[in-house]
Length: 338
Ligand code: NAD
Image (cartoon, rainbow, N blue to C red):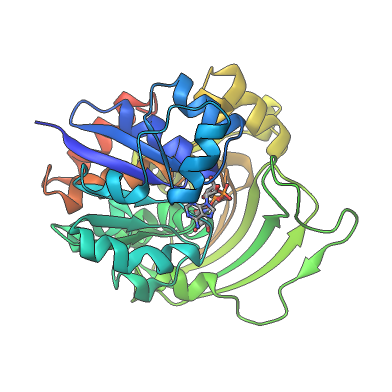
C-alpha cells in the first residue's frame, strides 16, 4: 500500500516535491493545490496531478478558466495521509490548525519557524527524530547545504567551531520581485539566523554565520571555515564527502569555475528541470592546514531540499527505519544515486 500525499502550494518547491514523490514506489500524489490558474496549474494537470483550489473562491476561478478542479484543500485533506505544505514562508503556520482538525500529518518548509513543528529535519543527521511525528519542518536550502557537508565531517573528525559566510542568491529565476539589480546587501543583524537554524538539527555544533544577498538567481555559495578536533589531510576530508549522500565534488580544473557551470552541468546531465539537488563542493577550493579546514560549496536553492522532503515522508509515516535505505531509495528513484 502506498502512502497518500497532498501538496499545498504547487510553486517552486511544491512542484519539485510532487515530481519526486511521484517517482517513488511507496508513495503517491493524490492532489496539489493552486490559488489561481497559471502555467504551473496547467503543468500540474499535464503531469497528471489532480488540481485542487486552496479555497472555494479559487475553485470558482479555475472553473471560469476551464480547468477541471477536483475540489478544495479541505476535500484534498480528506484523501491524504500527509500533506507537504509548500506555501510561501509564514503562510504554512496559518494552515497548521486546518491540518490538525483534518487529522493529517504535515511537513512544513524552511520559511516557517522551527517552533511550528518542534522538529527540524535532515535525512542524514536526524531522521529518527521525525519517526511517526505529526508535524515536521524540513530546513531551508542554506541550512540543508550546511548540514549535508558539516554533519559527516563532524561525525568523522569532530568539529570545534564553524564560521560560514553565505553569498545568497537574490531571488529564484522565476521571481518577479527580488534583490536589487546592482547592489550587494549584507545582512546587518549578526550573526545571521542560519547558524541557529543548523543547531535545530545539530544542537551541539558551535557555528556562526554571516550573509550577503547578491544580484544572481542561480545558486547560493557558502565560504566555510572549520576548526577540527584533530589534524587531518585533504584526502581524508575528500573521502568523507565521497561517501556522503547528496554531496557532489567538482573541480575548477574541469572548467567548473562558478555557479553558471554547475547549473550547466545539471542540464547536461539531463536532470529534471535542470536541477542540481546535491551540494556541490570544489575539490580544488578545499584547503586543510593542520586542524583548519576551508571550503566552498554551491547550493541550488530550488531543489536541494526535495530529496529531504521525500525521506521526511518516510520517517513520519514509519515506512523505513533505516535512513541510509530511505536515502538510497529516494535517490535511485530520482536519478541521484552515487
Ligand atoms: P513559491 O512562491 O514559489 O510557491 C508557493 C506556492 O504557494 C505558489 O504556488 C502559490 O500560488 C501558493 N500559495 C500562495 N499563497 C497560498 C495560500 N494562502 N494557500 C495555498 N497556496 C498558496 O514559494 P517557494 O519558493 O516554493 O517556497 C515555499 C516554501 O519553501 C517557503 O517556506 C520557502 O521559504 C521554502 N523554501 C524555498 C526555497 C527557494 O529557494 N525557493 C528553498 C528552500 C525552501
